[in-house]
Image (cartoon, rainbow, N blue to C red; front, top):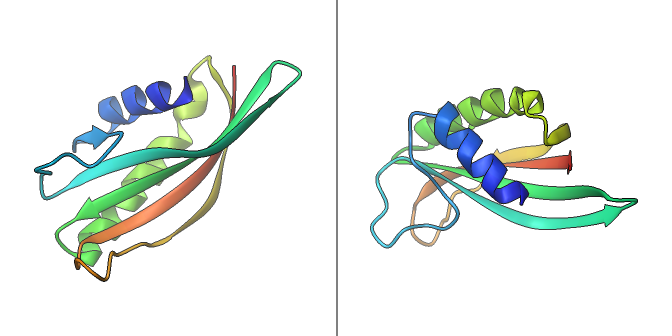
Length: 111
């Protein structure tokens, strides 16, 4: 399951907590990942994962987003990941709650 692979990888690579869903009482700075799509063809799996970098300020969220992207550059070293591509990244602040976050979307090919 690609979500577990990425969760474990980012947990080791980053200095902030990484979750699959926002906890009831989240820390000030954390990362949340979510699988937004996927498929399979000829026994090769693909997936799109969104990684949200949440922080107390927009600047800190942007910095964390850069750390996520840098960490994800090296996930290709895992045997189970054969390709990764940054699809897009952008300011994803929740204007209703004023919670600052950035989102990076990655396309994976994996076994």
